[in-house]
Length: 489
Image 1: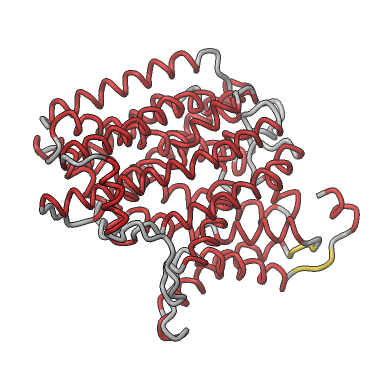
Image 2: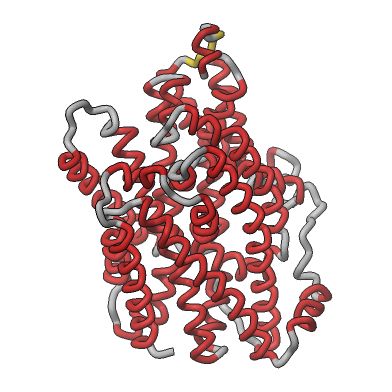
């Protein structure tokens, strides 16, 4: 495809997003930005969250990953279902009962100041790294297929992308994102369906035969029964469950959208609807990966990194229309992960660290000015992080993403589990030290697990170990809590 055509598509799509932004951000205030004035329709939130949950990582990394891991990722997805049920039935009622804007405010009420700042701080760290990785994936594709042809450096490409995200989230925040995510989910899912169609057409093989061939090649194998293996099915299932609880239920970005619903009942309907659809959508991505594998094997196509498989086939081997479909899908997958992260991080810093919701006499004008400053500062951090990741692209992005989640969300898992399922009070000032020590121990155990545990390799279940160590550390520095406060929380 011509670099000019690719760039033109990108600009047209961006113009469409800005149109939606202009419509939804009129008369927006700080409450619109943070929680959408609690007026978001639940079915719109549920549909839009599909795109936000999948992002460019799923769009490119999951299909490319199939050639190495088969369908073992689907067991993680089955674990997601249980995790979403826990969120809907345990966490959402808590958040709505306490009328939270930032979900980390719960930690202050339950434990105290330092635990609150620790939880918010780990979210900021994790979301910054995770969102930067997701953005890097898309920016890198644009660099390879567009900007390299014009000898434009990577940092210029990254800067353009960041500026566009800033502009369309600057005013409307979550009220805008709920609707732009819906638009982007539609385009992304349409791109997957059309890509499968073009692969079938390119091979001259009916879809039914492709499904049979994928099954016969054993690439659709889901369950790995060797307990030493890092993708042992039980590890995959429980990892998926707790990854969902942490990366969705304890994540300000994902919960901010749920908290913008009109009430708890609608938020729960949103969560159950979204989780059910997500299973089928992930299965569709895995079959796309299987068909890409069959296509590459048939045509003798080889790529360096698994993340490059989909873009190389779509843009170089399947004709301009298929390339166009891929590009629209990729852009649609990229924006939700970037805009939601920028908005949620702005919310967390504004509420959790600057206390904009608690400052008496603060005018809307002054609050907005502060929020704008935070927004721009986070965007700058994203830009720097993307440049750093551009030097470290040596494995599947989704693998990196879940590894980061294991280290950074583990302390949050331990904190919330301790708060919800015990009635003990922690020594608040010790919490930050435990939260740093826990992932450090996990890193050491993971690095030397083969030697220490008779060949055992840690996979995504590292998040469970991290959460357990955090929980036990809190227990060691805790005491029985006063009955009145325990009952209230």
